[in-house]
Image 1 (spheres, rainbow, N blue to C red):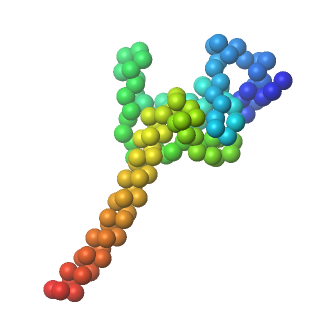
Image 2 (image 1 turned 180 degrees about the vertical axis):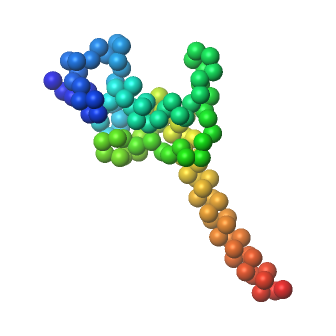
Amino acid sequence: NQQADSIMLQTYGELDLDETPVIVLGCNHIFTAETLDGVLGLQYVYQRNGLIDLQLVPEDNIKVPVCPSCRQPIRSRDVKRYGRMIKFATMRVADKHFLRQLNAMLAVLEGDVRKLG
């Protein structure tokens, strides 16, 4: 029987896939949705408004999600369930990179201004 969750060590034969859906990542590792939601900290990323409406909580420490087994980044084109989380984390990484570049440029300009003054 093939392993269906490399964290919970469950096989397909042990799962009722109607009640416990599985997610196949781009790296071909397989996890139950419940396990992957927990590992990725989905409960800390979204706050529940009503029964099904989810609002992304803007947290600075959200990281691009990775496979718990091989650490390969999870891409939204492979797993739609985490698309908003992945896009938000990717934007945060790009923002931080931009701000580092901007700070470096400002430091150079500040040095140039001090030389003039």
